[in-house]
Image 1 (cartoon, rainbow, N blue to C red):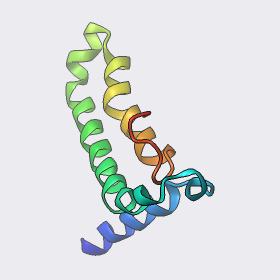
Image 2 (image 1 turned 120 degrees about the vertical axis):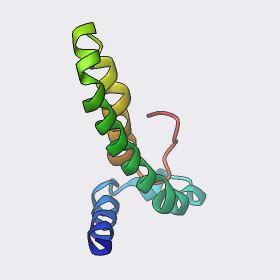
Image 3 (image 1 turned 90 degrees about the vertical axis):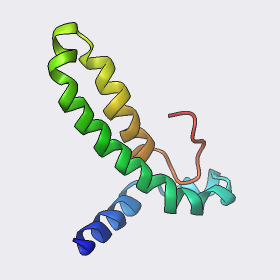
Image 4 (image 1 turned 60 degrees about the vertical axis):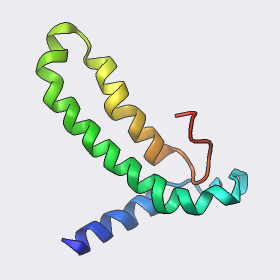
Amino acid sequence: MCQIVGAVFVLVLVFSTAGFAFESADNQLVIPDLLIGKPLGLIGLGLGALTYVVTLPITLPLGWQKTASEAMVKKPYRWTFQRGLGEELTTY
C-alpha cells in the first residue's frame, strides 16, 4: 500500500508541472506547493469526484450536474494538474 501511495505521489509531481513553471514562479512557494499543495489537491480531487458521484441522483433531475462537476471535479483537477508549481493559488 505504501508503495502505491509513493508511486502516485511521484506521478503527480512528474506530470503536474509545466517545464517553464520554475521561471515564472515565486521561489518561496515552489517547495511548499510541491510538498503540501499538490498532494492536497489530489486528495481534494478524489473527494470531490466521490461527492459528485454520490450527489448525482440529486443534481441530475434538478439540472445542476454541470455546476456540480465544475465545482467538485474540474476546478480541483485544474488546480492540481494544470497549475504550475508556485503559481498563484487563487486563479483556479
